Length: 270
Image 1: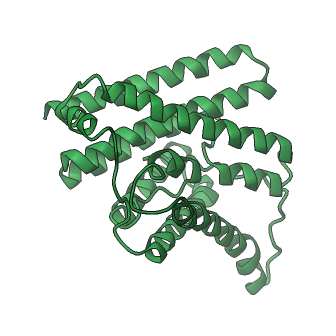
Image 2: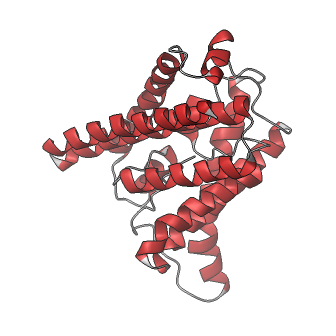
């Protein structure tokens, strides 16, 4: 089990490095600080998910260990991300709700994707040190990953849509719980989604995270991955918002919730 402790150490270092960047961001005005927070937190999310994916693919962890790690790392993300969402759909949602300009959202999304690319170089440099057997094994294949889909493209897209829908619904209603239970509830939802859909699509339901972790894998074209990991989650989020803010209030005679309410944060952590 030495490889497991090495991976835990890699996860810890990735979080600490990102936390240093977030701490340094405090000296900047809030208008600029949010961009650094997004970059640092997206970097953390992608780095940790890369390591967790490698554990799942190469080490064949017992289910209980894998779910426990997913839940714990998700908790860490939720506690440390502060105001960052690490998800392009959240930035687009904020534009639709009028809480952020299109230009600001565009800069935010570009920084998220830049951080996702940076995480690829970072984890490759860590894996190249050969700190554990699974790192050495991955290095021997030139850090290649293979087909992440365990079903057809349509099945995988439906799973991503469903996971995004459930996650968005959880974020929209988590405020009804006691504040001390909120992060545990979201972490439990993420863990359940990974358990339910992980074998079919990886249960990423975050376009920028998928771009970093799944898109480099062989087996499918770029457009096919866009269909699964970009279109699926976007449709999931949109359908969830329409259902709870438009369709249900209309059917039951209530007033619809306008698009001027604050955007719900979507912190997808795995």
